[in-house]
Every structure is written in C-alpha cells, then in structure tokens.
Amino acid sequence: MDLDSGTRKAIAEVELDGYDRAILRLLSGNGRMPVAEIARRVGLSKTPVQARIRRLEREGVIAGYRAFLDPIRLGLAHVAFVEVRLVDTRESALAAFNAAVREIPEIEECHMIAGGFDYLLKVRTGDIHAYRRVMAEQISRLPHVGQTSTYVAMEAVKDEVPGL
Image 1: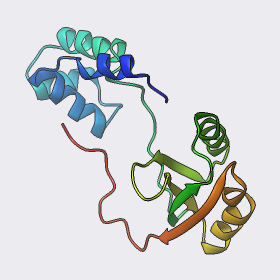
Image 2: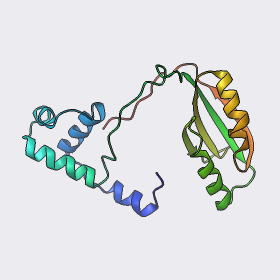
Image 3: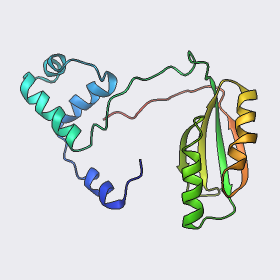
C-alpha cells in the first residue's frame, strides 16, 4: 500500500488510549476473537468494545483481517534476502521497478533502502533451485536492475509484528 505524506501524518495522529491498545493487542493475536471475550479481557462491556473496533477500522488502524498461513507447511521454506542496485533511480525508473516487483508472487516483501543499495527484497520459494529460477527468470530481468546480492536465511529467529 502506497501512502502519501498526508496520509502517513493522518495515520500517525490517531489517538489510542490503553483500552484501544489492549483491544489491538488481542486482535493482532487472534483476529477472530469474539467481542464478548475481548470485552471481558479489557474490562469493558461489549457495546463500547464494538464501537472502539468500528472506530479503529474506520480510522485505518485496523486495516483488515486475514489468516496467517504457515509457509513451511505450504512448501515454501526457503527464504532469501536480495539487495538490488538499480542503474537508474529517476522517479520513472523507480515506478517501473515497483510495479514489476508487485507482479512476482515469490517476492514477499520489497523495501526501498537508504544506503549502499536501492531495494531489499524478501523472496520465498520451495527450495534453492526454485529460488535460482526466480532470480534468473524474474528478478534479474526487473526494470533497471544493475546488480543483486543474495543472502539465504538459515533460520527465522524472530518473525512477528511488533506489539503495542
């Protein structure tokens, strides 16, 4: 999701009290938790909790609900991080690269970096052979790619959304 600076500022200004944070903590752990259970755990009645959840959804703090899938059980245990250096960093080149990255399902995350390279990709595949195919046939052919460096993850020591 691309956010302009005005949207980022508006999101940053959402005021959250202790009840809101407690509700968000519970929902981030289990998005299907019944409102009655949330109410019991945070010490409010059901109606104010429902109103708070609706407000948090309306204000974009709760962006949606989804199932968390286990990539290993889905046969996607191989994780590689790829540094990408572009040969052109004008706005049109960045836009072309960004659009093309979104079309490759194996790229789980893509971050523009301020530093010695331009982008950091998190690529998830079934094994090293599948990764090599994705690298050769898709990533290396992305618009304006000049150089890549790959780092294969051996183990995920911590992989979670930060708490409130």
